Amino acid sequence: MSKTILQLEQLFPKFNQLQKEYGDSEFLPIYGAGKVSSPDVMLIFMNPTGRNIASLQGWKGLRAPWIGTKQVWKLVNKLSIISNEQLNQIISAKADEWTENFAKEVYESVSMNNCYITNFAKCTMSDARSLPNSIFLQYKNLLLEEIYLVKPNMIVSFGNQVSSLLLSKTLSVSNYVNDEFEELVVDGISYKIYPTYYPVGQGQRNMPLAEKRLLRILNK
Image (cartoon, rainbow, N blue to C red; front, side, top):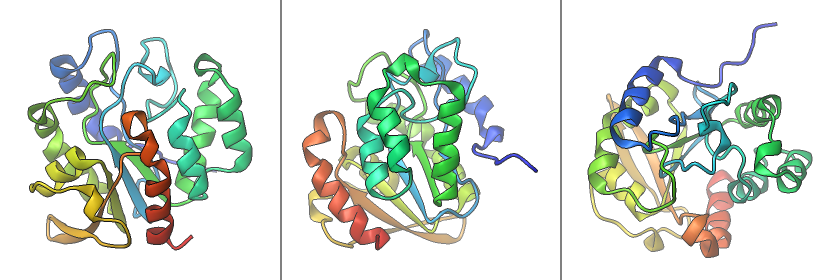
């Protein structure tokens, strides 16, 4: 039985180099993960922080978004991308109790349920302070390459900064509350982009709004 491919390893060297240039030196970069071929949806967040234990030097498993954290997985569970059992394990576990096997199981579920999760910028920082646009833009061509390789059916971009930079125009996610979308052409293919409230950190108060919009979009 062949193993499930969960990441685009051909992009790792470029992300590793950008971590050296823009990330915190004590951490490693975090790569996108999930279904790497034509998933129903790609979720694009901002950039990882050191709260993700997969960014630590000693971690030998998947270096994927949100490992060792809790809040985003509540939303992912509401979208039926991970199971209730997995969410309960995540909620009850301390960050350092995530095992490399459990992280792999979670992302196998993400893949099986037709989702790919990534960050616009892959450089891991020590805290959640916003990155300047200039750093995100260093990652834009790689993000477009990631989209081209994954070819998702639709893309959810979380937050004003991510959405505006991805679409190359200033926008406010507050104007996208039902099933409104923008279009982005990557290498001749048009993708529907759904700008959505950022659901964690300072945006955690917007979690219900993000959930409502995503459930509508995904027809769950």
